[in-house]
Every structure is written in C-alpha cells, then in structure tokens.
Length: 378
Image (tube, rainbow, N blue to C red):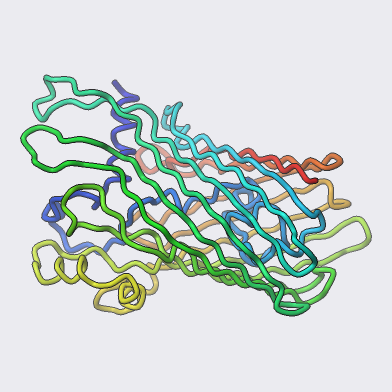
C-alpha cells in the first residue's frame, strides 16, 4: 500500500496541471507547470556529479544529451553510450527509473551527427474508482524522447549544433468513471539549438556554451483539444575554465544558469487569464515567460549549477557540484553532488551521487540518487 501511494503521488506530480479541469487550482500562487518534466532531468553521470553542470565544460560524449555543439571537438571519431538512473529510490520505489542511450559519429574534422533515446518509467500503478471500492486495471505510465542532431564548426573557436526531437508521453489511457474524457498518449516534436566557444585549440582556458532546448509544439492528453500544455522550453548559458596544471593533471571549474521559457500557470478564478494561457501561440509564450504579468518573478525563475572536475592523465576523474533552484513555490530545491569516473582503453565509466539533505518532511526526495553511465569509443 505504501509503495502504491508513492507511485500514485509521483504520477500526480507528472499530471499536475495536465488535467482537463482547469478550475482545480484555487490559489493565485505562481507556478511554472509543464508536460514531460522528465526532459529537464540530466540523464548522464558526468553532469550529475557536478550539480547538473554541463553547458560550458570541456567536451565529453554525454554532451549529445545537452550541448551537442561540442561533439566535433571529441578526440574519438565515434562512440556509443548508455546511462541509468533509479529515480526516487530513497522513497522506496523500485521500478521508477530514467534510462538513456546515444551514438555519435564525426563525419570529418568540421561536422558530426548524433542520435539519442531517453526513456522514463513511472512503474506500475494500481487505480480504483472514486469510492475506492472497485479496482480498475493497473497501468504502467512511461515517456520517451528520440533525437537526431547535426553539428558544424563555424570557425576554429565556435561551433553550432541543431537537434530534432520526437516526444511521446503515455501517462494514462482510456476513460474513467462517468467522465466522457478519453485520456490518450501525448505526442509532439521539438528542437534544440546549441553553441559552444573555446578560447584555445587544446581547450585550455575559457569555454562558453549556450543552449535553447525543447523548442516545440504543445502536447495534449485527452480528446479535449483545447487543453494543450507546454513542454519545458529552456534557455541555458554556461561558462567553464580548464587549467592544465601539468602534463598529467588538470582542473576545470564551471557554472550554468538555466531558465524555463514557459509562462506561469494562470489563476483559474480568472477566465480571461485561463483563456489567454491556452490560446497564446508557443512563440508568444516564450516572450511572455519573461514578462512580469505572465511570467515568473526573475529572482525565482533561475536554476544554477556550479561544479569542479579534476582529471589525472585524462583517465581518472573526481567531481563535485552544487545545484540550486530559486523557485520558492517549489521549495527552493538545493543539493550537493559528487562523482567520479575512470577510462580503461576505449571504455569510460561514470558514476554520480546526490548527497542527502534535509530531514523528515523536508528531506530532499532525490537524496542518495545514483547515476551510472558507460561510454564505448570506436
């Protein structure tokens, strides 16, 4: 019973605001709610070990899940990678997880292609009717995205990457109770645009990265076509600085700042605000997310990551990081992370750990999260 309740809560978190009855919200508290929130989870262990830092750091194969503009700077001509993250494990859930896989290939010295898949499972969930007396068929909600990207060097110091993405989200399917609503899987397409700058050819010195991600259409989960919801469009900027201490040792520092380009959820006691929220175009929603009327307060809209990575002979790595989400309405989430990796011949293995924080009802539900990843170069 305890596990079923936790699973149901996790499903409700994903369904929050993705519901046909928009009058369910009774307060004017500003929130940024989106469909497919799994797209905001960093799937790789290298980034996870540095507080989700990645945009401006030196290139690694896992950048095909983020700043793909770095891929032409990789030394190896092609590589395959996999990652696995048990999700909310500290709450006792055993079948909720995020898995990902990817492949890149350098076409020549100036360009490369890449493809990747992310899969998020919410486990098996048992449903009952409104009275709780009748058991309905259980379901296994899941979501996935599939990407294909191309990257090009613009000059010796600047590169650009473009990614096309298909997103599929199956939370619940069918009709329930007396409701005439037919719930279905949601589908949409989106894209990313990434830029990367490096100061020097050997990557020593300053790096900078810019990423516009999940720019795409809205998504619907029912036969009520008017209720289409935003996906987590995001703008992120990162800086990194690599100091090569000597031939064997180096240390790199970095900082990322991210902001969702999604308007704040409307006050559902205001029909005009609700109508505007659902009828505005996706492009207008990007600009409205920065306005004081429709967006979040600037001080609450930012997420930041800071981290450090030490490397010995480019084979052994130690990492640490800190993440903070300044959104007060979502609990000001913040935590420390640790990570390490080692490379043996043409294989690299990454692991990261999210340090527990808080206690009791304030304990971070992501405490003790582990991410595992492997890269196989060819």
